[in-house]
Image (cartoon, rainbow, N blue to C red; front, side):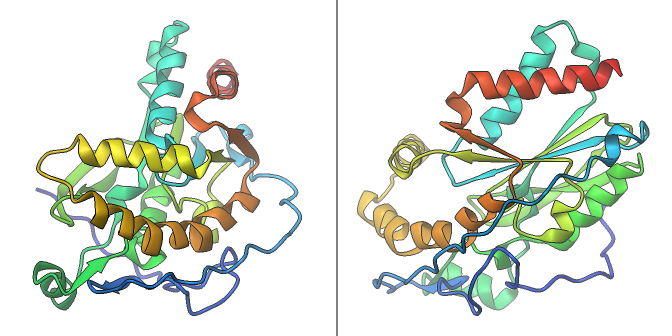
Length: 277
């Protein structure tokens, strides 16, 4: 099994132009006994960026990169699959086969021995929505390789075991790269590669309901009270501090998220137009 070489470029752990205050109010490592409501920072009101970096429209060798962000339960993964399926349904199967779908969750960084021990002993839980949970350096490296038409080694993440289980080779030559995840718009080094930045704006009740259904429908028993405590004291404050502010960098904001068929149709048509240029 191949391993991905490390990159020399390093990113700041938490600092971002999406976060108002530093250090973060919501920690990465959360004590198991944590029971207080963290005070999230308020997103600043700023003007939207002027335009996306549309280099791919002028360089046929570079794929178009589309980043899709939003809170957990907003339907980011389904939206990507739906876009690809729409392209395929319209008779462009060959083009759809050249669309790469990257999941930010696969780029969770591996825990240190100390962090893993604390997690295994039940002394701490890991805040998966914290920026320190992700290996943005590796994601940046993969985007650089794909932008050059090269193959890239992409990690595979086991969310239950909280560790990488291997690597998967993504072949070069893609025409479109869809990157989805809660914090895909968080780091500017990643954002600069995105030609279109999308944010799925889904109300918190809908997202929470979806997450509860997924948790209750998963393998094993789910402690609903513990799940809701984590949502109230960790996940929700993390969304408000880290994820929601990234909305200001979006070129396209989609109300109702994956339920907005019109918006998804428009993105699919844009990809079809790209393939015909």
